[in-house]
Image (cartoon, rainbow, N blue to C red; front, side, top):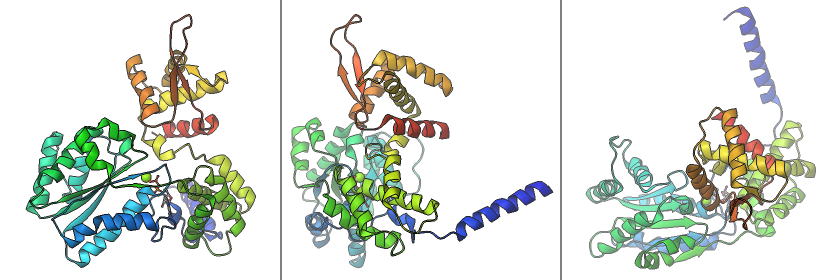
Length: 407
Ligand SMILES: Nc1ncnc2c1ncn2[C@@H]1O[C@H](COP(=O)(O)OP(=O)(O)O)[C@@H](O)[C@H]1O
Ligand SMILES: [Mg+2]
């Protein structure tokens, strides 16, 4: 290191140290992260109790029973939280009784195919699977073998099932596995989480009927409920006296329109960050307003992040075209022109119309980010029209550009 880099190194370390010396309103910011599951879930006690009661049989009669439970409800209503919280309780109750019961939670947005889901489960038992390409049937046999030979019982949650590519085969196989071996030992139970029950129509009649009941339906949170959730979380995340009751009410009322606890907690976290940056040890209403202008409940960062690179470019093309035209709808052909330009900008090889069309359908039906409709007849015949109504284009563009530049 020469003298210059040494001194700039010291300077930047000092800068780091200096920032660390600044007071902060966060006692523990990680308590506001999306992955954190609090030990108390206000206003979900009944749903949690229902879940526990459904599954008490697998503790009372080990390896002799199985359960299938469906949990539905809009985004941010605590579906993942109650399943994970139940999983933690199940683990400790089973451990206390020396039962070989495992809880495994798979996110189907991250693991979108049958094989990926099975691999994910098997990897939770063994740290590696030989890399040769196994078929789903072979993977299912491997899993069965592990469970039977080692007398393991697994409660498997398939979360965000809406995003799974082909839902039918895995649900068919798993439910068959549970039903057929009725009199022999049991080794698997299922919790399925989806936004709503519409996926049931894709299934054959008998699979559908075994999955329909029981169903725990979560409703959007009211402003009062969101207030309680925020207040509880505040105690863990902030130093006392930094967030007033009025601020919590402001955030709760703003997010009540969506009934979404995730958005409410994110607003609180971002508002806290804004206050911190100003070295202000109290969140003000203006900090909340600034936070509100920076995030939007309909733009889910984790969903945008998981789109393929090509889908991100295509979505950016739709956003830019809608912005430029200032119309409600844009035509697919115009979007594809814009898409070609952005591909050049990011040095990416543009894909053909069929692929783009499939991606557009995916952005609509799987991810719910855009809407499409077919136009009335014009000079060029009929064409597909695309719109985005739920999210501000400006924020969406910013977020997508950032993601594309990072990858
Ligand atoms: N009743 C609750 N009490 C405390 N936190 C909650 C509650 N419901 C949801 N949350 C929190 O809100 C966020 C969104 O909840 P989540 O379970 O991910 O919603 P969903 O899976 O229905 O989209 C998570 O950070 C979760 O911990
Ligand atoms: Mg969830």
